[in-house]
Length: 95
Length: 226
Image (cartoon, rainbow over all chains, first blue to last red; front, side):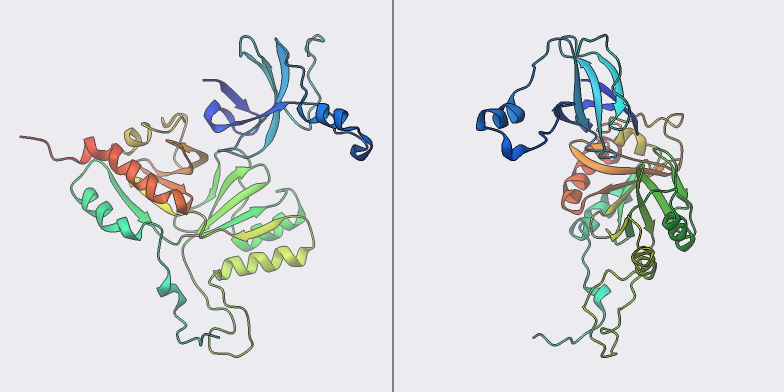
């Protein structure tokens, strides 16, 4: 069980959250101009990092706010948590 | 068109746990360590505003209660008007039940649409929000959740069987309210007194939560085998 610290509510069990996938995936500037392959890659292709990954989480059973978590996908250790309005924390280029 | 024959709309309401009222009462009557009951029809208003904005202070003037500023905080008083913190820009106002018939249903013929979302306070808040022209919303959520009150010296033991929060008084003092889970169900949990808690599950989950509580209470309410 992960213990994730919601930036608004404090530490809560993983069961109160839902996972939102990799964070900082930019929405295409002109989606209509993309080929099917590019659109498919935007929707479904992720880096599948082993190690530190910035990901989105939503506190479904609490404040219902989205926020970002930097988590190690190998050890499950949560390194940092930040709001969508906060700057992306530096992780030494591992992201 | 169906002719309106009665104006006592409040009498037609049926609470989500009306069918279990007798069971809850029987179980509670046999126990001095934990009791449970439904508090039906509390008036609840969902308010989304930036608490620092001008319209927020207008609304606070109407409710007579300030805005809670952080997670878990409750302003106001149980049994009167209380505002629960849901998120940085979302609050739940809980007040006692009151119904005021809108014009059109009280015998005067000015044709308002029938509604029973007519707590006088809600009506004033909605009007103030609309008049302000600022971003935000005020929504009557009275039918969204029902309220279960569990109390007694073992109430915390019952809740701790299914709630992931730390409910010890040092972490969860009186007049704290949080949105969390009880078993698999999302509920608002509000400690109103030292040994008294309010659980507010959504109406469609109320039956499950009540049955869950009855099951969890068994060890404290069952008659000992002699």
